[in-house]
Structure formats: structure tokens, C-alpha cells
Length: 143
Image (cartoon, rainbow, N blue to C red; front, side, top):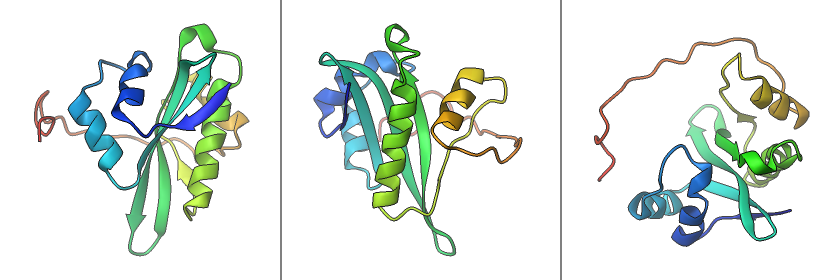
């Protein structure tokens, strides 16, 4: 397995089977151009087997932290330590960028995700509620 940072739209598009839906070239380009956005892709025999995306978040009184935005491992490659390796690789990048911590929101009934993050060294901060504002399918997606 090899983990590399995605730097081209083609790499992001080639990994779209790891996302919740199809990738769009325009959004992939915006993702790459956005400061603090990054994606690491794990390759097994040249095939994208997993990915983790992170977003740096900066606040005037806290400094910079890394949000582990999304982690996905292709079903064919699960239970091989790829998710843990991707999470650990993102933590290395976060430390290298001067982030004071890294965090992820996880559903409390998502046992595989919780096990992955804990095996990569994450501590449990307890339960929390995540609230979402829905703005419609196309709002902000074509800007």
C-alpha cells in the first residue's frame, strides 16, 4: 500500500468510487485550489483503495486544527489497516502544518469507524449532537 496526497483533478476523479456520489471536475478543481483542503489516497497495486479528506480550520483564539472530513475504504480492501493508516497519515500532515489537534464527528452507532479512529490514537470526547441546515441540492454547488 502507498499513500499519496492527491494533487490533480484526475486523481480525485479516479477515486470517485470511494465517495458518496460521482465526482465533478469543477468541484474537484475547487477542492484542490482551496487553502487547507487536502485528500490522501491509499493505493493498492495502483488502484485507489481508500481516501481521507481533511480541512484545516482556523480560529483567532485557538489557532489551527484539522477536521478529518471523510474517510472511505473500498469494501474489497477493508480490514487490512488502510483506514487506520490513512487516519495516521492525515495526523502526520496536521502536525506538520502546525495544527494543535485533529477531530472527527462519528455517529455513535458506527462501530467500524469508531474502532478505526481509536486504533489510530483518537480519544473519545463523549457524545454530541450535530445539527444541519439543508440549503437544497444545487445551492452553492455551481459557484
